[in-house]
Length: 99
Image 1 (cartoon, one colour):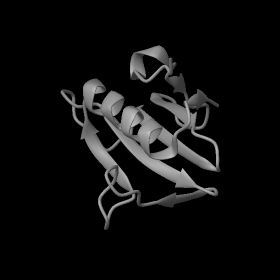
Image 2: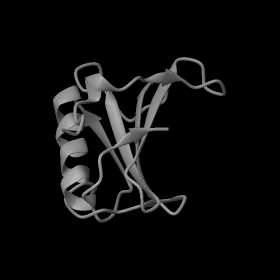
Image 3: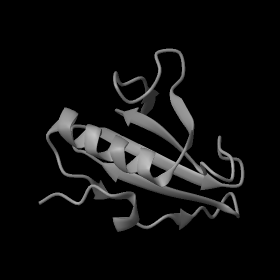
Image 4: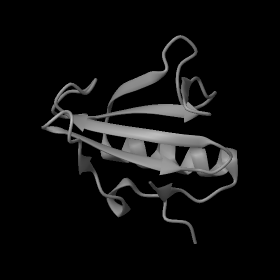
């Protein structure tokens, strides 16, 4: 069974932005989900995460995941991010692997 909960992955502090944490999940076919929290994230205390879909190295819109006019979706809770991971799994048919 695929691991589809944010809590199953590690948020790693970015070297170039102390206080900012990121987890990048690879769904194969050159599609990744970037999850960011902490310093500089598009977030608030009660919803500390932002996500972005990356395809072939570029931020992109993905229907059902991000809004058409915004590549980054912010102000998300852990439950919101876990739901997005599950949607990405259903859309791609691939289990996420942290990279």
